[in-house]
Every structure is written in C-alpha cells, then in structure tokens.
Image (cartoon, rainbow, N blue to C red; front, side, top):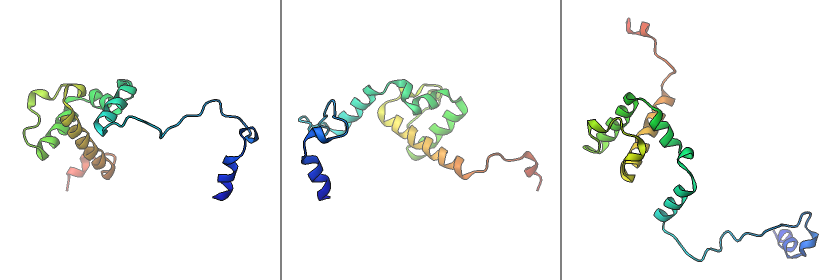
Length: 124
C-alpha cells in the first residue's frame, strides 16, 4: 500500500494521461436525508427509466388484481376494487412501495414454478 501512496505524491506530469478535471466526490458541504436523496434521484431519472412503473402500467388488469390482492392480504384495506386499472404513478409513496414488494413476491414465485403446466395433468 505504501507504493501507491508514494506514487500519488509524485508530480502530475509523471502520470500517463493528465486528468482534465478532478472531482471531489466525498466533499459535500450540505447533507441531505435519505428521503431527500430519493427525491433528488427520482428527479435525475425520468419516468422512462423507472422499470417498475413501465412494467406495472403495461400489465393487464389480472396481474394488477393479483398484486393488489397480495398487498391487501398483508395490509388489509390498502386497495379497493375500483383502483385495479389505475396507473402506478397515481398511488402515494407508501402504496407504491407495497406494490413493489408484492411484485417482487410474484417474481420469486415465477422463478420457483416451472414454465408452463399442461392441461393433461388434470387427469389423475
């Protein structure tokens, strides 16, 4: 580790390529809470990059019904039947987090199940 420290102490002319700009990443003066960070991050990334929003809004009402039923099972009364067709962005932050948790559960179930079940398996 001492070799790297001595290399950094040397003159900048000895570097193979001189840096054009030096950014101080950890030198922030103002601190922000985690919620402020999440809001700032959301502003940086547009809706086009929000994978959850795009995936949820593309799905049919059957999938949304399954997700919201799964949420209502863990937190009763969170969603009503008339909210099934609504887009992801119409819900408040807490309910969107619950939707994401339920979608992750469904994703996990999809990994555990085989690709398709045959109708012929109904004959025992």
